[in-house]
Image (cartoon, rainbow, N blue to C red; front, top):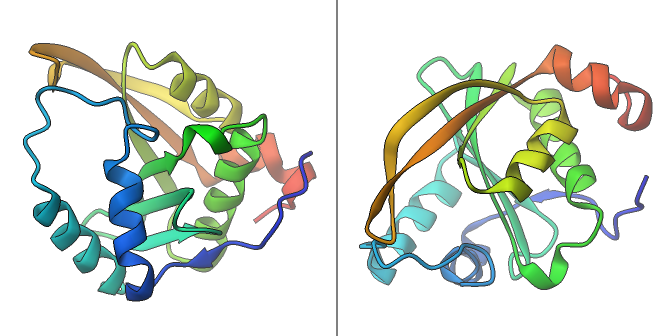
Length: 173
């Protein structure tokens, strides 16, 4: 188990600018010629998310990592978005994601975390498997990437599945 340098915290409006730069960075997401989002629209989204009591944006340093959890209508399921700069992607990514998941399960009404990942993103798929997430389905041609419609896979991490994998190392939630 990797010892992480600082505890997680919930980001605030003071972190908004750094978070926007983090998620727009090519070191976080592979650039796509189909990214039609304008920087000002991304900033508006980040501002709305960090100021909402219903979104949870966690991390240690908004310049290097963020874990965004967006609720569905009943606040039992949250969709996760993870952004970690490449120069901070060491062997601790599963532990970092597990710590954020644990925080959600302990501090909110969250019982299930879902994620969507491009089928060709083997790194993210490996992290999801190490977390204990299970593949639930495939959305064919659901994401536009460099001029092509690509498939996305749907993953689900329940509180029980999380505890089965991480309960002994992070403590059962």
